[in-house]
Length: 471
Image (cartoon, rainbow, N blue to C red):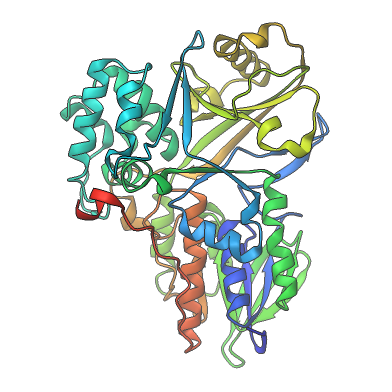
């Protein structure tokens, strides 16, 4: 749809929430100005050239799944869907090197499609497998949309007879890592959602995708899309204040790069940045309540250790590492073949670990190297050429019981012609790129409705397949 110069919108925030909202609104015919405080797009899902090693790195490895319908739809919109590498298999490795490959059966319907891999898993004892099968059956009775329950995942696991092996090698590593918090801090409803979406609903929903290019390059496609649709991106423009002029019904957004004006405003910021901006917004009844809601949110850190070796360490693209502080290995040399390195570039990720985040750089890198050698003996013969430790202390928001009561909706009643976006608003999803993309599409829908031109922008969820259609 061609842009309508009479209807304009400023989107504040160039993370996934902001750019998905901006592109959807540009596609809906509005003249869009996207404002970003940094010099690149992606927010917490971005990349940069690290000055210490001269390499382009992601701030942290980000993955998506087949159930991330809005993120995938956004990638298709901006023309980068072909830059995602997909896999339906996951390799778990024990210290010493023994491997377990988890993959979906082509012959069994959901939710049974993962059963053969589970039964064959070397990493789990017979008791662990029985415990997990009991838990999967029991979790089908948990309604992921029930926000009223105050149940915590850890308590539920103990009530449902989970073995220590099942907790350590599945629930704590896979589910707690996905939600970036300890099992005793996670709302049962969110754990149930992850289990349903990734392991039960369908094989397609649980397939994992990883970018084959740096994240800022991936999201840079949004800048081209906006330009082609009559919009623009203003970089290095931290927002200092926003003012509403009742007489002319327009917003003025004041940034370090100058003032911008538009008919509509989308605030697509992380919760802590939203809280900082609220005192510099027009006075509004309910602003204090929004501030109090934001104060209930807490951050969860994610750390990543980037290692460059003089030789290949493993032929695996990625792996789950068991029983150690490092949790995930991503072989960036294979996932991003454009690097054309003679050696090997690996990224190790540690989720849900305040202890690792508290470590000093050299200590954290030394620990990661020592543990990596337990899984891949080639580390002992390799020369480490470069190393980087990245601590993303504000990587996600946590999802304790009751958090949904403090997630506002996109349609804000605080200010006229203003809507909210961000992974932390009421999307029904935990802190993920999918939640951010959903929030952007919800904000775009709310704004189009305010224009009197309602549109369906939110992509529908994947439908459960097989027997899950009846469960």
